[in-house]
Image (tube, rainbow over the protein chains, first blue to last red):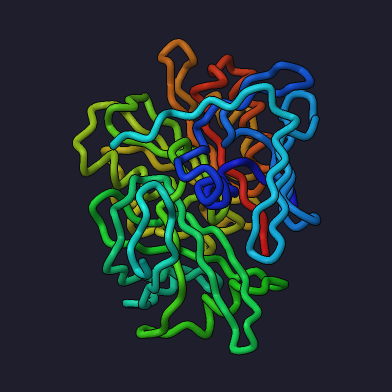
Length: 86
Length: 244
């Protein structure tokens, strides 16, 4: 099922403890910068796969096993999120 | 510290169903009592977790159907092969409980400070967050003009029709019916295409802000049409959903 980054807002909040859907993701493969909300997301695989909308490279993979989130961010060159306000 | 929310973290909380309202044959709005809800913005969503007696649990995301300051409601479409939606739209009764976490998302949201002109384009139950945005737009007294183009299979499938029809004279609400049109129908027919957008989309020179929500193929097609009309990518916000 192909969705977008809005669909994993809850998962990313769980991992990063801040809102991530408007954070800017920079693809390590092609350099495209896009809000997380506009990335391509595949749920229901073995794990959640986030891909670049420009070049389709994998940006993020999250697998949840026994209540632990294993997060692979190696496809990202940068991830810029607004600092949480207090 | 059980029961204490850690700041910045999302906690699951127990929601009690306050009421259910059938919107169409397959779509139901569920109003929720959430005593610890921190408030939300129009366009945000929440996650629902249902757990069976044997411990099996399923999570789904649903757009919040209400605007800022209103109590939380979700609108759910029943999918024939769905695992969760048949339960939510058929079995659930007032007083039943489920787990909820949210609000979630700060991209597909609108507040008066975001301006416009606003172009909202919905496919099917993609109208849910756009209804919340339209309510927010109206209640905030925003002076940017707003238009909604809503694609539905038939007039009977239009969700919130009574409410949306009341915008006549303020927001411009137009329907396109893709499968069946009633006799004498003078609205749009067929899928959203460039000819339709030529009549309803604000010119790119006005720097419109577009929100598109619907099934993935619908959103991709409409977003492409808007970019071809020179809408700026960062002013075309999209949210895709798929069934389950």
